Image 1 (cartoon, rainbow, N blue to C red):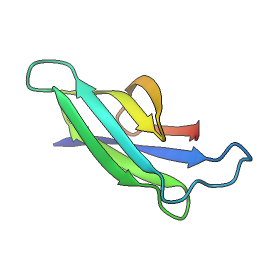
Image 2 (cartoon, one colour):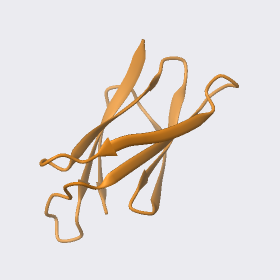
Image 3 (tube, rainbow, N blue to C red):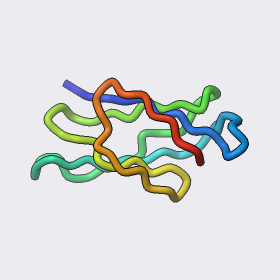
Image 4 (cartoon, one colour):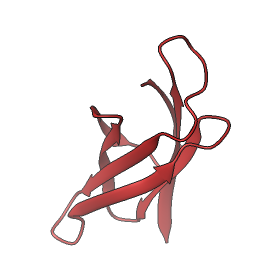
Length: 81
């Protein structure tokens, strides 16, 4: 089973940030170490971050900025690039 949340990225001028690489890091226990790339934001400035159940999404990385969690399963988070 997987958990996921949606990340929306905007530019400083409030326009949608399309094609932005979004990474993440998970934690929680020894089996939950690591992270990767969730992908790139779509035409709506959104991307889905997925991680294994039993783990926590602890950090989201957007264009060199670190966003600290934990991020909740089913959550919707908006960040400025």
